[in-house]
Image 1 (cartoon, rainbow, N blue to C red):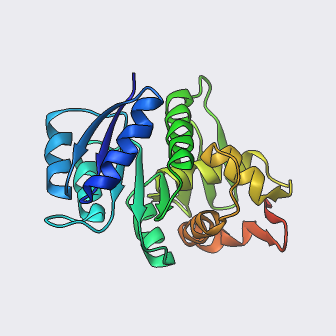
Image 2: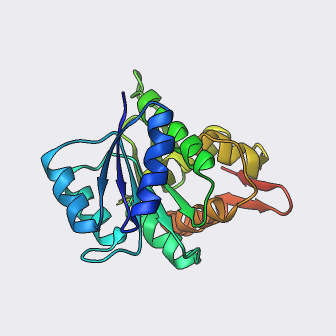
Length: 225
């Protein structure tokens, strides 16, 4: 039974998430601020963390940074009343798996929880080494590493997933719906800011090879290489 940590300074928000999570069969622990969340993660392990951004003592971003020092793999879904692109970029750079803007649908949140957990559990290392190269760009699927002109780039988990999917489907027009469904693992809800933010971060990481990600207006993206 998956164990969730719900972190929010609003008790009613925690109670609502707990209600829906326990209905879906999850075990739930709660934390009222970032400091308490970090302490709970140091003392025990969780299958997924739902974390609010704006909290007393220690905000969600800072708590996420501390948690990542000891656990780089636990999936984290951030909650925030603010939907600005800067906040999304900051969260994704810290390795956040998903970003949900308040107010949100509890059922949609549970669908995202299920999708993130399913994806994190089904990812298996490749049995044979798989490497893609284009000029000075090297994408090592097996080692989960990316090199740009000989320099290793430190991508976020979702940047790796997005790049790997696009490279494996290079030359194909990938709609936004296809990318969201196959990289994030849940149906497309019409909010494409998450995808666009990750594309922007990925292009920044690829440097001179950002041109390989081509924008198809009104459709999505295509990786050419």
